[in-house]
Length: 118
Image (cartoon, rainbow, N blue to C red; front, side, top):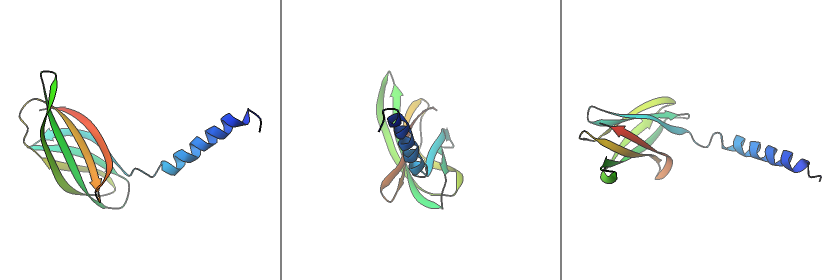
């Protein structure tokens, strides 16, 4: 095989791998905000309805440090499209870092970190 074929072969291989993975992640976490004593999480879902758990680990940010504040979980049923999930938690005014996990059958489907100010 000539050396000119290797870059083409590698490019085709990458495209094939990407095409196999396009359906792998069916949920994604979008905007997150605080309202009515709840962390509101926008979750997009591209599949059949699914029962999931949404876990939020809250860290309070103060004086250039972060300290774990609380961990909360709530069940949710995701439908195809955009879903708003309210995770009840009381937060005092301040800055927070949120670690948000979407779990299904004890497996992590997606995870993100978001910063919010209350």
